[in-house]
Length: 190
Image (cartoon, rainbow, N blue to C red):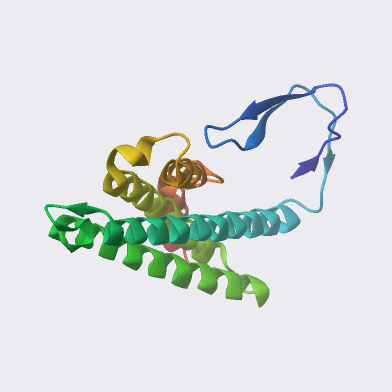
């Protein structure tokens, strides 16, 4: 991990806006002077684990919100004289979303506890991030599908959950990267 001054030569920052209205930036480093922070592997790895756990926690909030919004909509929206939540396909997707949120919460708290106790937590953080990425993907699509045409309205709540969940799905490494990290940890000689 290196520290570089934002205003130094070789650091270019291009402000951008995401589709859900958030402001972000593309930062490019070209031969920028930087100072190493700590010994290789120590603070950088811990910071990476903490940031990844924070991203998984934020994704948990997004998926909980998307599930709540979608379940409420499924109770109110009627088709063929009954709420769409009573249809098997919709109720199964909501049940899968509920299970995804529970798994996210469990794996996140396990990772956070290990971090707080200063125990090795790389694998647990990777598992939490994997669940956050996968569950975020599934719940984002469930929200849009259950809401139908309203789900893709750029001004609607469902769309904002969709774009936030998709952004966090890949933030600090998507599910595939996390699965590879878990696999490498399991393959390490004891």
